[in-house]
Image (tube, rainbow, N blue to C red; front, side, top):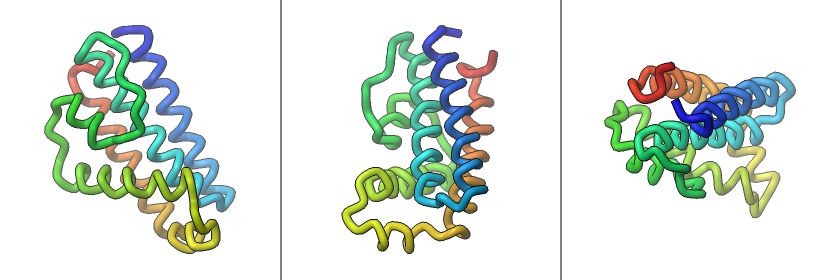
Length: 130
């Protein structure tokens, strides 16, 4: 496994742990943001291994999935599309109060749970197994 791939994986795991800490402290917008970031880095790890090159600087999860050339389960792909769109709102909220209302505890919990599932699924891909 490439050193940069391993760095992406470790960073993705760190970001997922941070998402859990943000959930525990009630910072739900940041849960969404960190879930997106953790998926982005894990997908970049996969792209890195597949292409044997540093992945492009992109936050677009759909684009990264395409670069991985993997067949995600439909429910995971649907979620990735959803969190991909949420990333813009949580990264650059035009109306902070509305963003807070859009991502209450229940939504943040669901996003965190699904992100953890996708992490496990992605780590089972042959290219990421150590």
